Image (cartoon, rainbow, N blue to C red):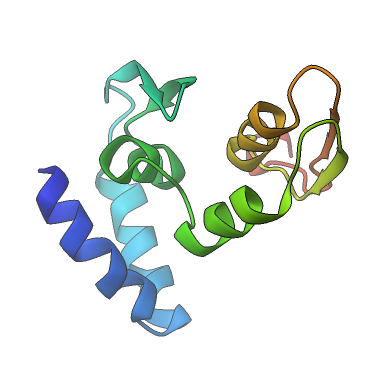
Length: 119
């Protein structure tokens, strides 16, 4: 299954936004609330992942979310820095930054978007 996702995900990301929205809508309609929430460790960061969510599945199957962003963070963020993660969402990149800045650094995360579940 991980191989299938590794092949499918780049194809999905290359599709026009309108097509990706249609696929995402279909995915959300067919997924169930009974999908297993799993506990996993990727790159020494422990996650509780909901297998019914796109970001969580990306972490589970690929080991990262947004490959280019993850690579940029790894190349830019240094120990003992203070970094700000705006649009933090569920905190995937926030956790990576926290790992990189270690004990002497600080990560400030902010998600300005109200979740549709809170409306």
